Length: 102
Length: 102
DNA sequence: TCATCAATTAGATGCTTGTCGAAATATCAA
DNA sequence: TTGATATTTCGACAAGCATCTAATTGATGA
Image (tube, rainbow over all chains, first blue to last red; front, side):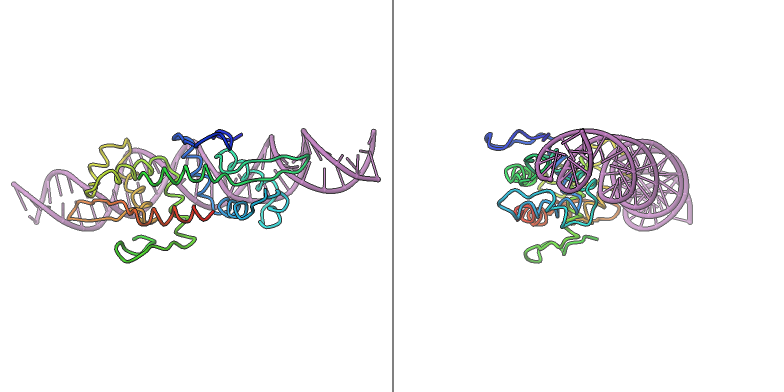
């Protein structure tokens, strides 16, 4: 599950731990690429589709997606045996606001 | 030295490597704290002064400051045996713009 | 010059993490 | 039910990193 409350439930506020999780998630180049790909779709990005674009094993991809989900940066949508992801721009913007406070 | 061109030389543009260095620099809680402290001063923050606020050895502090400098997030000012730091908000904002593109 | 103080570097240690293959789980279709 | 496919979990390994102490460099003042 995500460290941030669900989407569509008002303005997002991040505590220290969430800020840390997000910063860590963004610090890996592969995950940043994954976020870019997910963010480039208006539709949810399908897992298998994502997998085809990145030279990593399914296990590694699953690990990264879990990190992104835990950080709250993606919303996970499960349909049967398929999984899709949606970028949570509200969380991303909440993180940017934290940086802007510096 | 910094991975980003010097301050005051026009708008900052970040390449992939710089984005990665900044993200990594922000991913450590101690460094985020350091940035907060440095950013809270309008005057350059003195190294010894910073050191008094954080329970780490001088060696560890030096290591972190080097990471921040390499990422381009702080400008280093040396005067004799003393060192001071200044937050580079232009670089920070350039990073936020990268995130906003997602 | 010499002693002192600020900061950096070197080297070591333990923890975290990105990665994989293999095994497990879950869903769907025949 | 059986087999195939999608995703996750497990266990292991190597690389990276935060931290320390000790040694070093560099500047200042007596």
